[in-house]
Length: 509
Ligand code: NAP
Image (cartoon, rainbow, N blue to C red; front, side, top):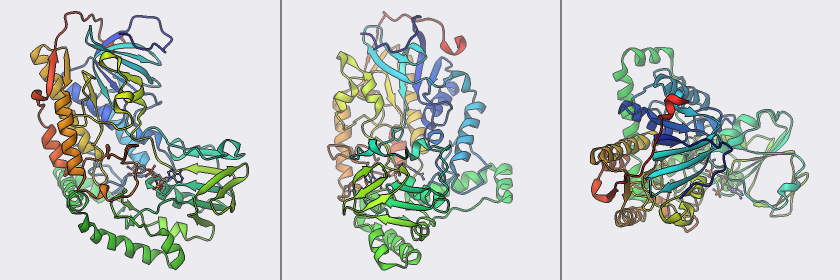
């Protein structure tokens, strides 16, 4: 079976032991782990112009991680230089670039190099990968595209007729000056509540289209003084201790989120008090008050969101959007909101990821057809029918409360263990059994039923079948413990003598 060749080169494919798709935290983490294991025969394909993944793409004003900095980094690459307790995007992007350099991953990275197709060859036991910069064969494929990498823009009637400027928060138009403009922001999720306070002072008028109000809690963000940074530089154990404290503090939310949603009322009280303190107008407060269990959608920390939406140049519209006209947006009540710029803060295609449509497994089956809009994997990593393919931040590995980097590192252990197992056994094919995958997912969904994410709100955690295929529904240390060792009993091994290969790509590039 051959891959759909959409690249322009006609040379023989380069062979690598491992091909990694994506150079964000996950893809780079995998690359570093391979190097640490003594494996140098790998390539990282990145469609963007730099490493960083989501932190490269999301450069909107105010973009900041809402997980504390000391935890939002690799455990093996601490950063004593964080300048805020919650790092802004440029600092995280700089950190990722530094890590790529320090661990000498750059020579393996192919930038501006999107993967256009990947097909499993069941004779040679390789993945045939077509990219924008040539074709490859890879003995193992690690897919780390990030679940939040494809911006979602709603198909609003009349949007094409809009005469002004339109963009998404994840593809910010930095050359479009917002000063003095009439701007609409659609959506009130994690991105919107960061961007609105930044642009509100600049614009003449801001219309915020809110479909569902978020629960917002006070933000603990503060600068980290040079004195503190010195301590972290001189005593790395101090930073490790802070990191451990932050980690445990975040896990304290799990009993409420994943076991007894009733416990979340404590956090809800905090959020209600925050709203009361920051919004005095009872009518606006009513419209900003959510009617679903706190935690069902991501809880958003901000001290600046409510003050921003109470400014005289801001209007919060809750009637819904009926259509777009050349000169503005008409809401469901028929009122026209004249704007010259529409910014979509409407999230991402989280459960219909692009990679699934590009990937063909055994018997020519496309992953998007197998998943059919409802992704499933074993331990969030491997998929029956797709041998030697490993997902990072795959199905049911997402978090609302803790650092995704922790989950990524757990997966790196697992994938490294799988590759070692193959090598030890002389196997060229490793495929999870359907039974193991089904049993695992049944267990996840049983657990999910008791969580706050199943209390009835609509969120991007739910796929189009209504299944939560996104969130890890338990303590994160359980995920780590589950993935600490590779479990061969869940897998079939195979061997082929038909594999052909040529020079390692890293040296050749
Ligand atoms: P999001 O949380 O999915 O929010 C999208 C917003 O757009 C929601 O308010 C949604 O309303 C609204 N929306 C979607 N379609 C709409 C439509 N047709 N009409 C009107 N409103 C519509 O997206 P996001 O804010 O980009 O965040 C996505 C995820 O990225 C977060 O949950 C988080 O995991 C991550 N993130 C993290 C940070 C951070 O660390 N600080 C920052 C940004 C993003 P409904 O609620 O009614 O669907």
